[in-house]
Length: 236
Image (cartoon, rainbow, N blue to C red):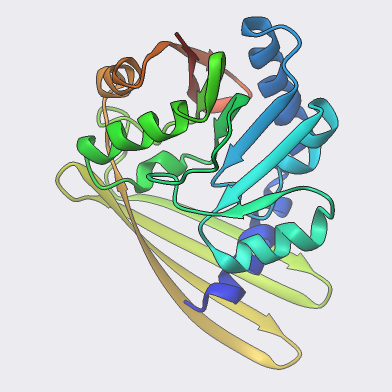
């Protein structure tokens, strides 16, 4: 689907889902500060349209974002003037400086192709941490928790526009192929858009091994705030 419209629709869907970015950001800050007291800086990777950054900037003296989609980056920059936003790929970016914390939310880690890219990505993320810094990753579903044929549906309305989204997910080897259909209706008419995603399936042990290879001591935190849990690592 067209990237610009996708970024806008993505934002609308999650607003209507009631995603509590403020509470999630506060929880992330608590996890960071419990492991690195007085943390002052955070880099939110795959930051999308800036939903978490909007609140992380209030909880840290310095908050920056990194996003690969130029359209999502444009939305985030308009919403968060004064916040430094970088365009880059989570697998191989280099900002030339480090942070007290790096976060990767929305199960974005699932977009790496395989275990080698998982290792590469975590090494890149950990390389942007100060010693003792905290890396927090929201995983994609695990192989044994994926529901074959899973269907999700959303209906959102906003400012004279209605968006209906339906997704269908199937197992494809060590990954999930997710097909999404959108009906977007406004005064100009109705448009049918489609999108396809491939998200890799990794076991908890594979995530933990990737953290270890990246030089981080990691633990898996189960929490109602994030239904898939969080991996929290501290750089040695």
